[in-house]
Image 1 (cartoon, helix red, strand yellow):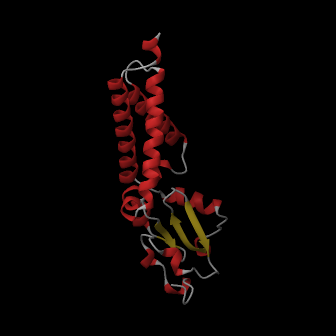
Image 2 (cartoon, rainbow, N blue to C red; image 1 turned 45 degrees about the vertical axis):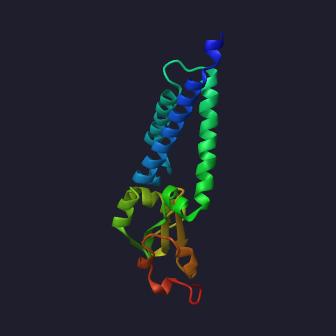
Image 3 (tube, rainbow, N blue to C red; image 1 turned 180 degrees about the vertical axis):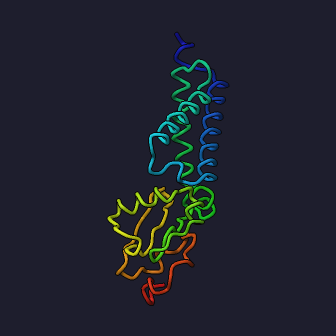
Length: 184
């Protein structure tokens, strides 16, 4: 019965190391492939997430998972997540873990190279614009792909405070006439 519920200290260490390694691998993949990987998920994206979870669980717990191994894996994931959160507070840590927001549109103009950077297609951008209540490109002052994977859309007619563009990849593409004066 003990073999079905618990594991040795060496096995526990192996579970912790493999869990942390799989977590790190997933973070690196998301960092390299972009947050598009976890944003606005389609049915295909959900299938991939389920498969990722299955692969990570299998790799972390081994061939014959036991209760103790599951607890060690769970505690390791919580600890690694907490450490990642603490790391994001530091400028270098945040740079390593998080992505910058990316300008997709400004003054009704779509920047195709910026779309490619974040792996967003034009139809996906159109969907986000419709969800934001946009009827035409000319209504869009700015559309930004956020680090969360969502697209924020600012409408024409209200000047944009320049501070909102700090850290935005492509901010130089925003025409001056859209910016509030003296707000830097």
